Image 1 (cartoon, protein in one colour):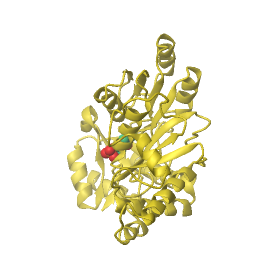
Image 2: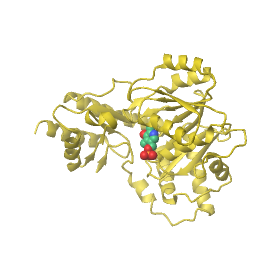
Image 3: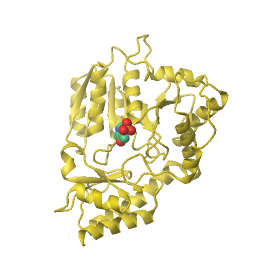
Image 4: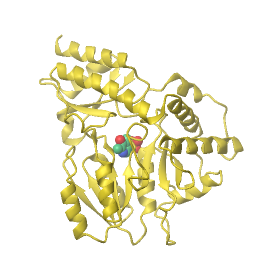
Length: 358
Ligand SMILES: *Cc1c(COP(=O)(O)O)cnc(C)c1O
């Protein structure tokens, strides 16, 4: 089965085989070395200095890393602004609400470009804000939000920038230093091609709240993990086998040429899909250049429901992804993540052609 959903992804043989390594206790030195290697290899992706940056590994899906970041880094007297234009931005507001973090949200329609002028006006009127959270790639629609623009606004208004890069880390440009990123959440099983179960936060070592305060969460407290992992330990049982897979996926990632190579590979696949679908009259939701290379949304062809398209493709070995909420009736989504080849995309297009012209 070829998975064109935005994670979990098709595994390479190399990553799949890595799951079969020996049983391992998470309190032993071998685990400590495995953990350390992953932490270093994650920082290498964007050339980050381990003195200044920490990668912190969590057992849980991408949402765990986002919740850990948001619940751990805003001090009791801090105030968070969430800029939303999709499901995942709205999820951050939900996290803030549950953890009783003082916050406000700027809500856009799903897929809409962020209104930077409005954002600036809002910040001028709300000088008590301390943090801003944003989704890098809104997987709801495929829109890549401009971290460059957001970051320059954050720097101007002295806001700490928290980024959900769960579906872009490893495949899109991220300039941690230049953009003044405070922390960023990612996961093993999207653009890094590992298995689901491990997620991580890349955090500036100066980002932890200075004031002594009770953590809002026991299991997801980022500083607890960071301190333990710096000492070669782990506060709780980690998912050992998914660590094996992530270590191998990162080795493969670096062997294949790092994030720029992965970006190019995804771009090649996505251009093939976009052009192929366009030639059949299937229109992308967003104009060229506004989407990530990781996922694009397309309008369903006339007379074909998502379920019909999905089931036909599944019968031929492909999984696509539905739209969420109101978009579920009008769009479908195609992702390029995972160990897939241009020839897989050509076959995918053939199957779509066959359903349009039976
Ligand atoms: C996938 C994803 C998440 C996390 O989803 P999980 O189901 O918890 O892995 C968070 N944010 C974005 C932008 C995502 O694409």
